[in-house]
Length: 83
Image (cartoon, rainbow, N blue to C red; front, side, top):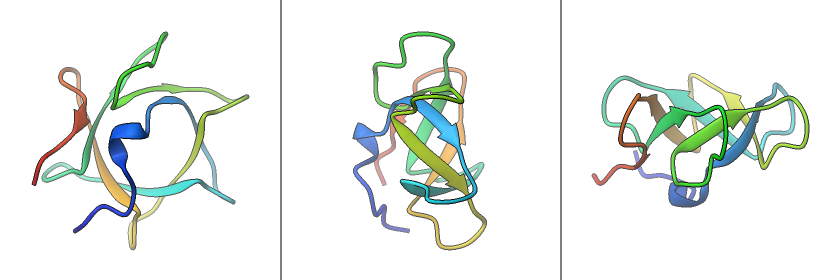
C-alpha cells in the first residue's frame, strides 16, 4: 500500500482519538510504512511517539481498513521504512 502521508514528519506527542483524526493508521506486524518507538520524553526523531492526553502534535485514529499509513511498534530503529 502506498503511504498517503509523509511518515518521516509524523513524530512527537500523539493522542489516540475516535473522531477528527489527523491521520488514520493500521497496526501491522509486517511491511509497515513507519516503525514506531514509544518514548517517555523527547520524541524528536521520525518514528518516535510519546502518547499524551493534552496538546498533541498529531491526533491518530486506529482503523482496520483504509488507513493513511501502516505502523509497527518496535523497540529499536524507528522511522520510515523503504518499500
